[in-house]
Image 1 (cartoon, rainbow, N blue to C red):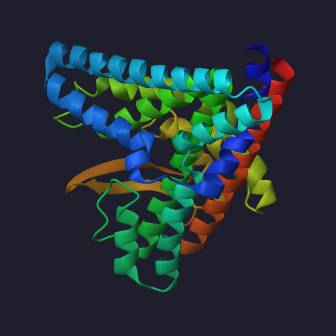
Image 2 (spheres, helix red, strand yellow; image 1 turned 90 degrees about the horizontal axis):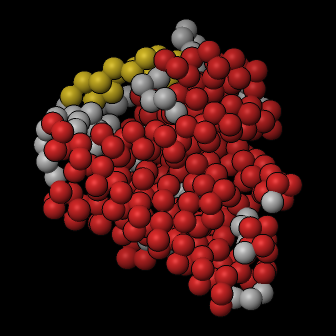
Image 3 (cartoon, one colour; image 1 turned 90 degrees about the vertical axis):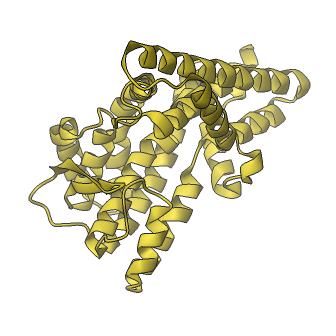
Length: 322
């Protein structure tokens, strides 16, 4: 597929389609199908503890990734075979890959939280935030809602935008679908609780592995560039990102959250509750001030500009290397 590698993949077009169209209905969304398939396989394979649970979890990951990688390969092959025009084929592949990206959806969920905070409708802001995060939101203050929103924007820049674009650029549609399936699995079973500690081990580790390179290659450079363009603190984004990323519990999310903390001039991390259970996270960029609602808007702009920058860089690298 000589023409395919160079002309059929465009991260910028994929990002454009996501911004233009957004999420399809749930019945047509591959991520929803991935979640349903994962739930079905979990019912069949689940084991709670020990080595059998880890083996069952590995099998679940293998089945999910093999199936969705195959779907991506088949769809890409059909597009290349039945759409001979390179431009139309590029548009079709980019549209399909946009289903693995969540830039518009992220903005559509975060900005209503900001609007409710600005209007001092705290209860409604908590309700809106609960649709976006896994932590308990019923008693969060304005500052805590602001922090949760910025943290979610930072982490989602990685696993919702940069990583799927990276795998689309390198491996085409199969790569994008495999990444999205792995990330969906991690969000469903990759938890360190009693139920999933062993069974979800493989899903969590594989998701960490897939996000390893994108986080280290793109997080700080693109967030710094975005910070320059949106008048945030690019220097602090770089210094805080490099200095404090390793303090985060996640080996990859720390790069994004530490850089966002520096760029916005705020501290992130602290105490969260998940289904009533207390969970402590290291505080990043202490002793900077606590998050405010206006920092949500800055973080939202950082996500948009950094996403465009990554897409452009990936397309340029593909053009130069392939």
